[in-house]
Image 1 (tube, rainbow, N blue to C red):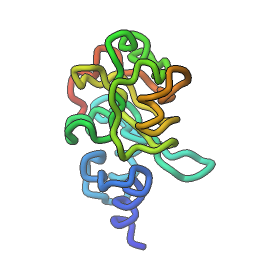
Image 2 (cartoon, rainbow, N blue to C red):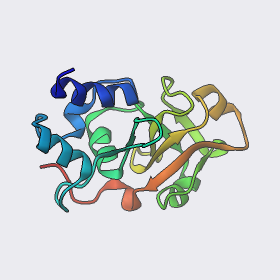
Image 3 (tube, rainbow, N blue to C red):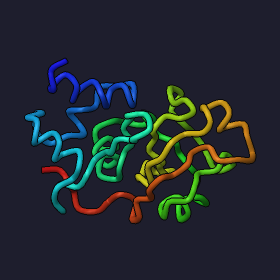
Image 4 (cartoon, rainbow, N blue to C red):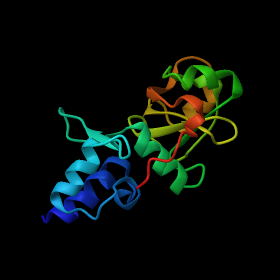
Length: 160
């Protein structure tokens, strides 16, 4: 498989949707692609990282900001109420009792963007429940937040 095709299909396999053009800066010249994944400067932080045990990609805050800006709600989002905002933005899990909505296409184990009631980005993580479970359960974590995005993700843009 050509490297350009690998660059486009790997994130699509991880998130089930074509997103390489949103996440990565350069058009997949080998070194440029490698640098855009690894984050080689303060202006261009890492957008994702690969898990060693299964080869799947996980989102970093920079990649979450890009996807959040490119895709309209509810795509890839877990929406929490105002009570959970201060906790999720510093990296705490999003519990089911605070979830007000969720992308119906998300399944347990999928990468997700955790957002507040006004669609402000709070964190990036992995879902533990599907939409039906998250909206009906009153206990347990709906999404494990890997990294919070303090300030609602409104920091200076990290795109090119």
